[in-house]
Length: 562
Image (cartoon, rainbow, N blue to C red; front, side, top):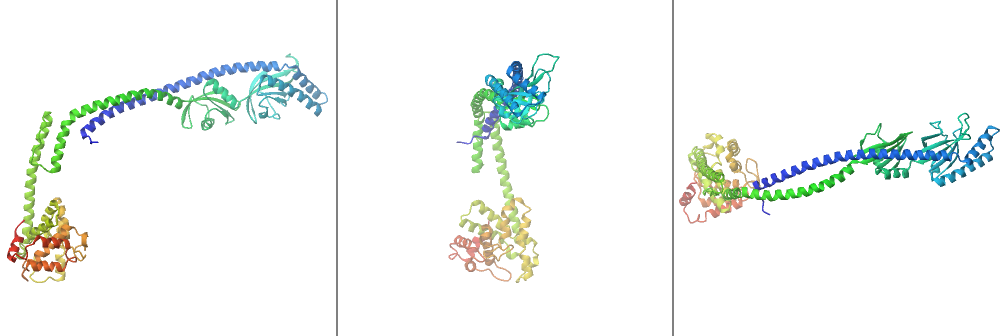
């Protein structure tokens, strides 16, 4: 797939980002409003559920109290308890008699419990000691637990916590006579509803919400996740209308808070909000897809209309730059005055830059040649040395099929290869005889000194390796770093061979110049030690007619200039 132009991409991106931002803001607004409405709705729902439950529970408790009051008039129960109380006052009751009386009361309670399906039906003596227990949940009731009641009324309601759980009880006093003058209470009849999982599920079904029953800080029944129930049980103080439980927000209502028992009604705001938001976002998603489709079509049309001429102009400029064809002008597209002006301005700029580049290049070459000539002029015997080394290095590089840009680097680098000799005293540089060890050490400093000088000129950076490393040798015995073989750049290896060849074939005050053929033979003796084999092969190939030419002709060939 073709990469779109930058302006097209920006147009598309800007349009899509605009639509995306609008949809995102809408999404956030819808989510916040939906959540707030859900929070209010869930809180109101719990309040209504709590009121309905309270009304229903009040009525049920009232009916149960009435039922307990009726049951308390059961003759068999009264007779058994009266006998037990009378015998206890006048001489005591034997174990057998007590067991018989309890059995009688227990049988009567079982009949009543089976008829009304009570969870617990219990009779408590006037001392608070339990006399008999019946009902479906009697195993959760501790018959040996001493009970105390908060009210002295004939009928009452209370929470009783037993070993097996908590019970909501309705109680009625068992009296022999219904007179206020004589207190002839012989016991209390209790009807209890177990606050267990069945009770929690019943409440949940009635309220259409979650239920958590907490007894003395411990969850005994729930219709929600255990982690949520435990988090709610750990809340200290009053529970607010909304609470965060297990990382999720809930609307919470309190149905009962009495006697160490708390019954909570709760509904997940997050779950309700997710459902409501999902429904709202379904519609928003449809609108969003339509918006993106429309934005895509509009963006493509707009971007192509605006950017097609610019794209053609940019491609033309890229092609010209890549091919470096700065000699031809760009044709103005003719679609708008702005683009025509841009094309004409670019053409003028290219012409100005080409002229400036040509002038700079000429000045650059002139300065380098002048510098090389000034260096060679210090010693009449080395006059033209840098020019000849440059010419020979170029011939070698061309026979090695190096790139034209690299050949240009070698041409100028060879011209400057001895620039460091500026720092060598004349008495050493022009000494007619052999150099001492100390003097030779002074001469060996010129590559490093030359590189240090040229580092100050940024556009000469490509030529620094030639200047600094043209005396390195393949066997590692060169200077200044002792590099070996291919550690030495090919540019420096070429100039090293050309420098040595010109030095051998040039006359000095203390010796005449050698013939070119003799110099080539001498270089061959030191191949792979002092000189690179590939470079020597290229040098030999660069002068195929060396044997046929006279030495004068050959010298003239090498002396013709860069």
